[in-house]
Image (cartoon, rainbow, N blue to C red; front, top):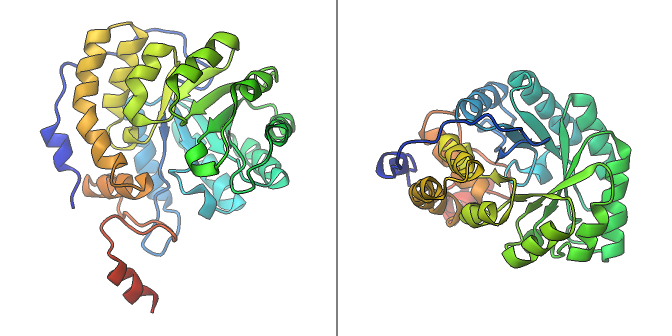
Length: 309
């Protein structure tokens, strides 16, 4: 299946121009960037550069590297550090670079934070420890330990569908007391709870579910961390800009155009595979390869078996 036909089929009205509005510390239109790789599974520096240029040209003011969509569990600390350094060098301050450093081991996460800081990251993304399913007290201690390890601002990542454990409203409120824990990427999808937490504490909310970007922004989220923005950054930026200027009608128009694009990337899943396939079809990166246990979009079980035998 090819993905670039979505660009031709899905059109929106006039794009909202960027507006002179104070930028949050971590930006507004953040992209959960894929990690381009060669067919041998090696991170491709030239493709990283090309993708970053595409994201900046499309209006992204924040780039999350080595997150879930960036295949973080398969990257070594050295690879993560090299990737952060390459992206920060390429953006030259035009966008914030947030490094995914969260794991289910606090000591490893702290080491990752130190590597990311040394590589020039502007912020850290810390996911709720997965698989271990710690108590809320353990989650609080884990996140504080990572936040204490550097001077960088921290965005929490609440994604219970992947981690098995959600950040409760009480935990979010307590973590917001830490001077460097300033934001949360909400991939939980409980909009009512998110509004309650926004009313109770100072955490800046970012929608982490592309399908819900519009309602989250309408409810008070300051921005998005988008997978769809890998391929269509201008459309996602237009949506965020429209909501920032309180132009709801324009935002609805943009969102209607984005919906089939988002469906094409998010519903077949995994998003890292579909986004890379679309980027490769569009000629932005050279290869759609991912690392096992993911397989490239369109790969059949028979082909995987043949390859591994």
